[in-house]
Image 1 (cartoon, rainbow, N blue to C red):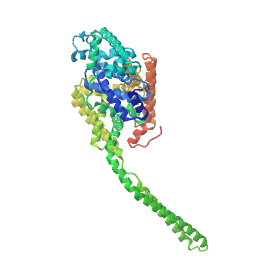
Image 2 (cartoon, rainbow, N blue to C red; image 1 turned 45 degrees about the horizontal axis):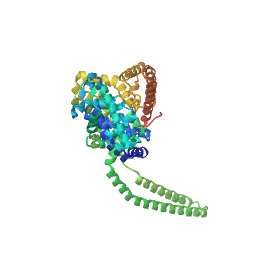
Image 3 (tube, rainbow, N blue to C red; image 1 turned 90 degrees about the vertical axis):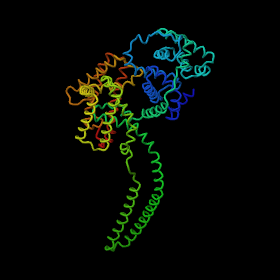
Amino acid sequence: MTDSQQLLAEYRQNGSDAAFRELVTRYVDLVYSTALRLVEGDTHRAEDVAQTVFVDLARKARTLPHEVRLGGWLHRDACLVAGHTMRGERRRQSRERQAVEMNVLGNHSETDFSRVAPLLDAAINELEEADRTAILLRFFEQQDFRAVGQALGSNEDAARMRVNRALEKLESLLNQRGVTTSAGALAIALSANAVQAAPVGLAATISAAAALTGTAAYTPTVITTTKIIAMTTVQKALITVTTAVAIGAGVYEARQNSTLRSQVQTLQQQYAPLMNQIQELQHDRDDATNKLATLREENETLKGNLAGLPKLRGEVARLRGNLGAAARDAVKAAAPKGNAFSEMFKDPAMLEAMRPQQIATEKMMYAPLVKQLNLSPEQADKFYNILVDNGLKSMQALQSGTISPDDSKSSKQSLAADLQSLLGDDGYTQFQNFTKNDMADQTMLTLMRNDFMDNPLSDTQQQQLLQVMKSARQSVTANSPLDPSQANPSDTGQALQQHLQQQEQMNQSVLQQAAAFLSPAQLQTLGTSQSNIISMQKASAPMMQKMLGKAPTGQ
């Protein structure tokens, strides 16, 4: 078992953050460099792809085989994630640009390598498994031939021959794509450019986000919050709340460590007096028991004296009352105070720390609209920040329980004014139409996309599935005032049941129509994903009711 496999086993068994950070440090350059080539040199997009790949690793660590070659798995997953990311962009690119003639032998400059880079990883993935592993170990993980031989179960000379043959096959694949090169030139180019240093701090960022996701993958509450399909203004605020709680709770706890340590010391100091009080109460109890026994004896002696009986009974009642009052005082003294969860939403620094995750949530929901409106990067950032600011206000109002119909109306008017100022009347109309008609299905497809990783949907299948989902939703809601895509996670009782029943009807209609263009494996994945979302919606209701201060009702 290699060092990487041992670290993966330690993380799989114990959830060790240190082991996962070491894996990220070892492989972040490999993943980042692969992503950078596949996203055409866009460093920000490459960072997003790298973070997604390590999130996948954290989420799937417990299902990976013990003998997995981690470098190969990460490289393939990076290719898949980058492919999903760039598919829309690559449709616009000319096929001739990918087949441009170039001669790597004639010039090994960074410019020429940047032109061949988009074709390199696709060609590597077409190699046989043994050849692909040899290329990745030698040039991407930068191991010597002896280490390559040990990993492949052979010696140094056999490893050198395997790498040379793999380079020759890679040369042939690139020649088929119009790139004239040689095995020697490829060896030089890969040695110099295959792996580039990732930006400073990226490994730490990925470790924090991926480790949290790995833990959250087995926490029903977090799974629930990431798959709630809530598309109204209040529901988007709830998505922001639940996502922020998943990320912010850990950050908040870290910031409160010093405070908690002080509280522990204070409690320890209070422990001794409480023990003394308990001992005194035990003394009082023993005294009261003794007195009660004495009184009972006297009561037997004085049975004939009716005038003294009420007095004895009063003494017994008084002693019992004193003992009960003392016990209640002790319980009150030991009762915990405060609500750290509520305080988290009053901390401006904490809310600001949650902002990046909230912006990521808005990007997931509104990315198609931003592309449709052709917004500049500056306009897109302002658009997302307007939505996040509105969500924060709604989150604070919901948590405090002070929201009213007038407040909700004022919040909507403020949001509309800000968006109209940024987008114009026509752009704001498109925003309203997208929110009402398209965003629910687009978001559901985005949430399902990871489930289709093993059986990816083509672009045509995605468009067909979106159309079927929209048609099914319109059919189900044609004769009903309710819309399954507008289900409120905080609904209770009959309203929640009606929403969930309509969602299930819509799912069945989608499955029946999707059978015409999905493979059996894809159709099974779709059904499983739909069932998971329904289960998450049912499970999310109690948590949302608790956060909004509602008493849970019958499910």
